[in-house]
Image 1 (cartoon, rainbow, N blue to C red):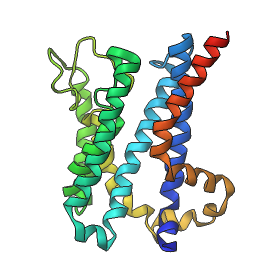
Image 2 (cartoon, rainbow, N blue to C red):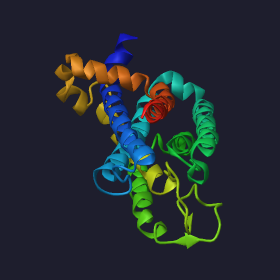
Image 3 (spheres, rainbow, N blue to C red):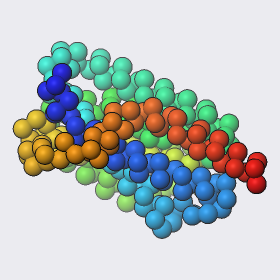
Image 4 (spheres, rainbow, N blue to C red):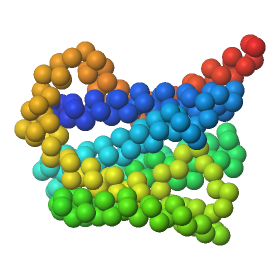
Length: 243
């Protein structure tokens, strides 16, 4: 057990950093939603939202590589990843339902949990082929240059990255380009493992209090993801009622 903690602390820390970025990003979005401040579609809020999603998604691929390196994961095979991806995808559907009630037509059709759930399943064949993963990942990321310029008259391919005119969502992370980042993360995964280059270079940092705090946040990222927006919204509603 101690070995696993030592091995994964860097990933937990980076995931905790992504959680903190998410809290700031969504707080800025809520300021816009409730008070018209900080347009989330431009400037710093827009860049922060993209950086946050990018870090989360990249860490999915890194974590998949580290998980697959364990012998028990290889014994369970595809079933483990199908089950894990399916559970997270169901969480995404719950988010879709909740946001449909909360924000109406801008609800989450295919957000980051949908992407992670489906991405875990689709990434399984790449876990033993790092170079192919990197090549395909960069190809998918590059494909976004074309898909963002295509408009379709229907909504069936929103999950892929093809939008219809007037589409808008509070969280939209389709397979193109975001699944490409998962595949790039699979290529980078071994650098984060025990004995990997990053692990050796950052070993002392694992003892810092800030790093331990971020790591704790990273280990509870899914719980924080589900809880933080209801807490933010409740606070804004109470503040609006008092004013």
